[in-house]
Length: 235
Image (cartoon, rainbow, N blue to C red):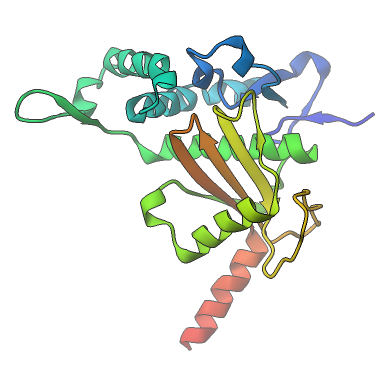
């Protein structure tokens, strides 16, 4: 019988040790009716990995609430404001204009990136049936105003060649995870089979129609090859 492993750390789990991690966090469904919560993706996780992301999930939910422009996300916005003000440093994170109106909220980039990495690893597990290897390094791009030519090319690649999936409802989380291969030529929208030594695996995510991110899993040996190549070019 196939061993069940934690999607995040890869630890083998006995039946009594299995918990379920929701991808994305249940907090992103606040205010939505039950039709949006059908077939939400869950994956197996150990107790420690399932619980350590709770603050990260809350911080991401708060960010979505603060930037929300869609009425459908009003409940998330209300919860976010209360959550931020409830924290000890809540007022310190707020920016006010000369008239005393709140004009912005500070968010730390690290927990936002960790949220995306967690979801990438969770959806990778859901799609392929095993945890992402430690032989990959994850990088996150969340600044849509600073996308490089390569980043835009990857987004175009995912949109042109593949069918996007969703968890619960496409308005909450739409995503696409695929190996990124240069010079690909395909006419269908089917997933690519993953090879043993895939150099780059790319994942694109759109949350609550408010925020998008791109995550790259790059094979560490491939990264070293790139570094050596750049070093040789300078010599």
